[in-house]
Length: 176
Image (cartoon, rainbow, N blue to C red; front, side):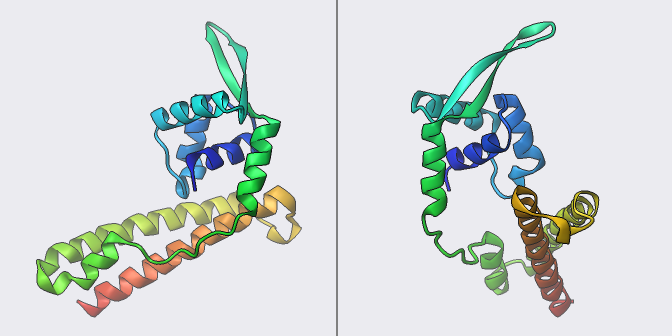
């Protein structure tokens, strides 16, 4: 997936400035696709030159106007084309998995410390995702359209984090 597609999806949800998009990446999209402030602005500039987005200036109180980007018809077509393309299956490509496999050849205690830290990160993310689910989707059976799509992506995140926590816990318990 290219950053362009993540930005198109975000802008289809709601037009935004570069700063607003960066904040969305920090809050939600960043859970599965990350981008720096510089990457967002550089990519928006390229997308504007390519005709995928259009920008309008919006006044701000006491500050210079900001550019607010929206998806153009050409950008909508590009997004629709990308969405229709088959997605390659995702496998377990993980530096941590390689370290677990090779732990016998080095400092196992250091590897276990890394596993503990990684498990703690996944547990924290899992807790955050569950809070979002409880707060934003108290009745998933009533959802449809975009709300259902967002909920199901969140559910995927919860299931992935549960898997990480379970797997790393199992690894740590086996080496206790």
